[in-house]
Length: 199
Image (cartoon, rainbow, N blue to C red; front, side, top):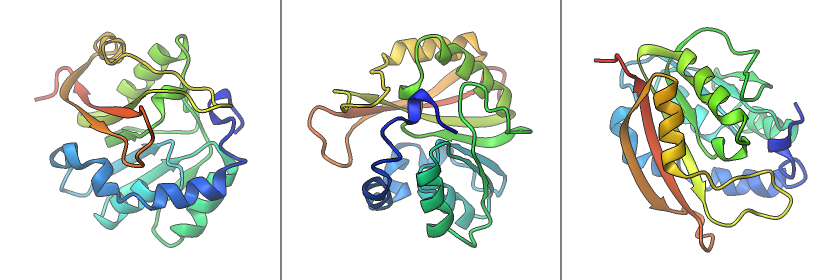
């Protein structure tokens, strides 16, 4: 599914696949590992890339649906993690029309930054509708210079927090961390969101 947010990724898919797979999923989620359900449940990985995180969740016994709109990355994911029992979908935010049901965990690693100002509140409302009442969404925001040829935005944390509140989600965790690939000037924020009425 070709969208503005995927531009530039297909041409670099081979390099990116090596990059993505070089980072352990546990390192990406190290600040929020305690929020990942220990009991097997339903997991949705939005913008799954090469399927690195989806595969890590599947190993934990979760039923995983992985969404990736870049055909070249999706092909790598299917090859690298064949047999992992992951359901692969070609779909994208803000609508995720092909995704059905609700989930105990939804992840958006390096995804929200590709949505423009008009798409972000819609995407957050869609995200809220995908969560089980006690579910959690783990979302990362990229800060720093935009690579040439990418449709990408440095979104202020507080804007995303406000969109979450407007969609009925509460922030239960926020942390910042340096880029794991060592890219100059790049840092990240991780937000964990739950339905506001969650226990």
